[in-house]
Image 1: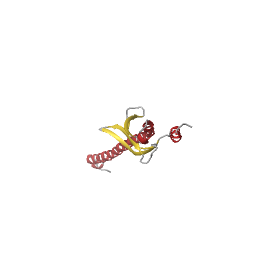
Image 2: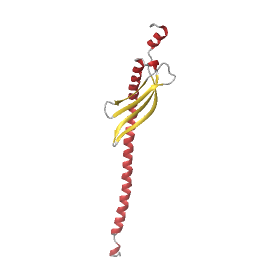
Image 3: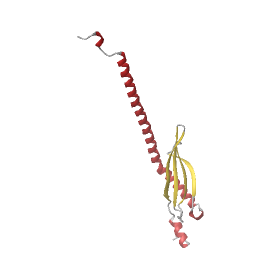
Amino acid sequence: MTRRGEKGFTLVEILVAMGLLVIGMSGVIALFSGALDLEAEAAERMDAALLLPEAVERISNEAAARVASGSKGGKSRGDGEFGLGGSNRWKCRYLFESVPGDDAGREVLARVTLVVPAPGGERTYEFGYLPIALPSDNQAILRGRTGRPQ
């Protein structure tokens, strides 16, 4: 036979159990919040990586245009900024200059930075200096050697 005072849980035991449950659930919620932030950052990095070929192509076109416009000694240098991906969200900032020792002016190093707006400012993804080989104009090379087209 049980006594009347021995049945069930006391109020203190229930409060302690609820406190432990709240502490445990707070940790789980913090883990999920951190995981969601990391997933969003990973998706943004993937977007930046997917936009990099478009940025390099546009930089290559501008560098080729500067070389074709008769830059002194085939040397070229430029910088600028343009939008990427058909939206105003992503921007590319760049600086390029001819590789030292490249007399033909066909190789440039481009410092590429992709920029995306973020809360409190903007987030940048720096890709460093990327080598870019510009297309050659074979006819111009042939004219330069022989003085007339072949």
